[in-house]
Amino acid sequence: MPISSEEFESGELNLSLLITQFFRSNPDYAYSVEELMQLLEPSGTILTDEDMQNILRSLEREERIKSKIIQGVVYYAYYKPKLGFRVGGSYANH
Image (tube, rainbow, N blue to C red; front, side, top):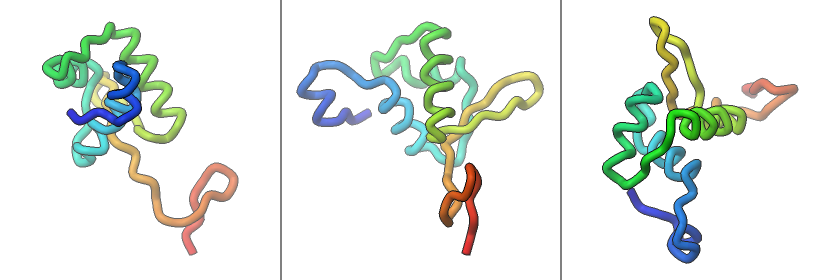
């Protein structure tokens, strides 16, 4: 996966950015934590389950991804904002 110029200069990966880029590149699919960890491992990104959970919760709070429990498994997907403007936490289409 490509890295940003900031990451290149600092020599460190921003894991939140890496995961956001992954979701943005795969907007039509949802992934479990285990699947995400396996998919990111070949890029040299090895995280603990707890670290991955923390990053995913942070990205969800920032509305970059969304989650849904399906048959007892939490899946995460890219958050595609609706067109319109926000009114009190929701979008109003005009």
